[in-house]
Length: 124
Image: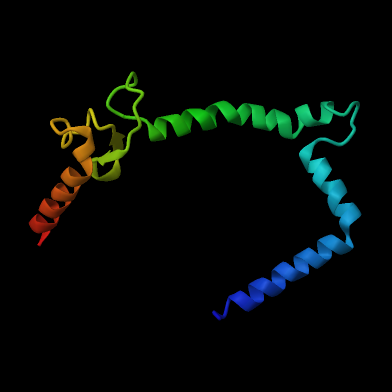
């Protein structure tokens, strides 16, 4: 066993035991942080607490996820950007990737393997 595992397991056990011992206080603070304590109605606290923060973050999170995973050739290309270009700076789909444009879709694995071998040979 590594040296850090035993102290980490002891710390985790202490935290679990403390939460079990002080459960009513822990539960109360959880609901305060969540914002769902009965403020002036069951849902008012949620919408002004955790719910309000979640509503604000959903659209930017989905937009960033979409941009990160789709083709970066042009905004109108909705294909999955599965292949990295420029050393990982961007992603392009099989239609726009410069090394895969002239090859049929089912042969991409072989084409990428060949390009990898050529790149490795140039580096040696």
